[in-house]
Length: 229
Image (cartoon, rainbow, N blue to C red):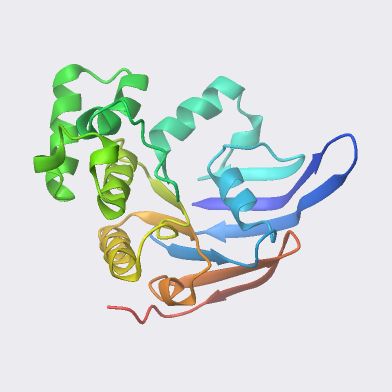
């Protein structure tokens, strides 16, 4: 489904250059649930941002089902990202002035989806994530777990092919974190391809494969059986 080939990225300012990724090659198969792990500064979030087309590589290729996304125009990549990729952030990234319903609806507005279709999709994910009774609340009226459910609903409403999760349990207590991981595992069982950055070995156990990084390179790309229930 996804093949990254010799991806490299350097961040530079007036004083220092940092090699964030060095010749990273990775294949992600459709339907996989992958954990990317490593210490702070290892490059795992940078790698996820490249998979999510939030950053451009300095060198390398990004193939999605045979098409090299780096050969697309900027506007074409943005359209591809909006229609194929869903992103879940550690800090939720909800808009405080909007209701739960409006936060979830927002990416569909950007895609210019018709109103009736927007209503149908938003109501579906509200029900799926047990948020219907909260749809008129604003983010600051919700618990951390509820806010993350809204963030997941916002990612799902576009019906993405791939879900990218950057430390989705990082700001949650252990009980709510386990609930979020169980939800992601359930989505994966239904066919979603999920790539997740995590520091937690416990949460990595929900995944089918663990990719380990250090100093901007892959040091382990092993298959494993998920053991969490």
